[in-house]
Image (cartoon, rainbow, N blue to C red; front, side, top):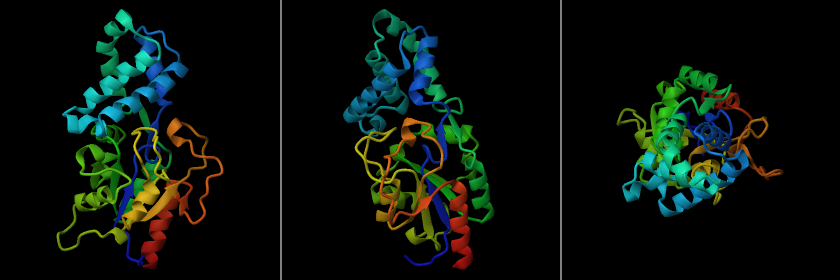
Length: 273
């Protein structure tokens, strides 16, 4: 690639900028018990994975092609999760009218998610460098609510989510859509070689923690001719989504051990370009 100045940094959302406050299955189970359901954390964990995979298999991209709203799609996941975890009958029927909206609200806000310690300093530093910032996520519109609740949205020039896009990661089209989605003068469109993508997924895998589709932040961005950094924080595996294969082969992979390294990469490139 050329040594063009970086004008845009695109971030993955889950486990890159934001992460669950507590493991998702733990939050689901806690809320379920508060609504009178006798379910364990482990049963909900297994039930959630099964429900998510089944629902995504029936209705890809959160049900958009089937005319399903994200809330309707997630409501089905919630019901199936609880049934899989052992809840059912009249007990479940009575709890769903309040359980479902409680969980929907939690995971569309800062009740369910939080930022990392390096998230806000990174965004502020990139803004000071006059670099545009965007998010590319295989998610639905509720992610925008999360970003708003966590005060990330004001830093973003664009948000590109698969539910509202013609494609999804790791396909190049969603990355190129994000470039077009970023407001710049018509005479100065942002090129792929002027863009850096940062995310925590290396390879496209069949089972992704949130979308259960083939997701690759790093390989996908490179295939779209963007620059890419693979995020590998030196932190314990704090969620299912943060779990990576032990001893994974990172030879030849450009790795950032935190978002502070992303800022340094952009600054050094732009000052040297």
